Image (tube, rainbow, N blue to C red; front, side):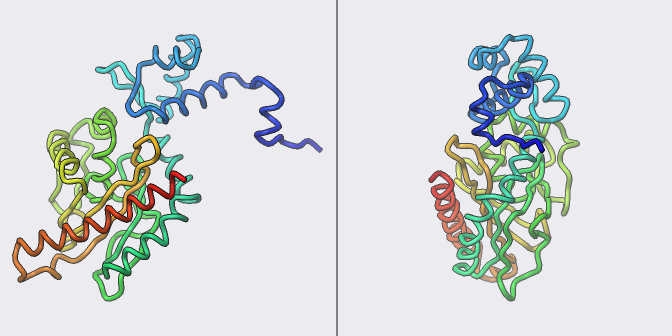
Amino acid sequence: MSVIPDSTDAAATGPSQVPAADNTLRILRYLAGRPAPVAASAIARELALPRSTVYHLLTTLALHGFVMHLREERRWGLGTSAFELAGGYARQQPLARLGRPLVASLSDRLGESAHLAVMSGGDVLYIVEERAPRRSALVTDVGVRLPAHLTASGRAMLAALPREQVRALYPSTSAFPDRTGLGPRTPRALRELLREVRVRGYATEDSEVADGLRSVGAAVRDHTGWPVAAVAVTWADADASGIGTAAIDLAERDLADAVRETAMILESRLKR
């Protein structure tokens, strides 16, 4: 009976018996470690591969959505299929496991519903959901997808992505699905919104996912600075009625501070 060798056995046998597969994985790992898309010539140089090989592999990867080609910049970056793989790993492994108790504690402390989500193409995918008692019903739940540009979680992660990556995800007005008639409808509007998120340090949304519900979110970054997830809290706007705009803004900042603190704790635990 044949036995498939584990990674240590495979490493001991020497060079890969499938060079194309080996080089493909090396390219994906290289791109995953870059803070921004890079030129094919840089990939070939850093990995000591022939340029023709790199171009052929990048073209095949692009056909399957694992990389994207930014034609104007002549650079290559990770594509949406790579995010799907990352999201799948995150759902099964340390991100959900480490994030669940932190999100539960955040919800208990604030008395509001809290979530942990990852990017999946142009959507956010919720991997942890903690519902606060006696609060409004939410559309979010584990396994639910929502348009990233409409959610606080998605905006927090989009604001932390390279601008070229955002342009690839939202190239035209057709990339902006709508839920309540609110939210950005064009690439320019999204760029301005994400600029505000970066200045503020956290993301918000107000009735753009569901009428009467507001959220704040903060990105969770890995050791390279890449946004691997986002923590968010959602509450009913009606809870703040009658207390004045200044008090509403103060309440939002207090919630945002708690969300950012939780995101930073999760970041530190992921990096251990």
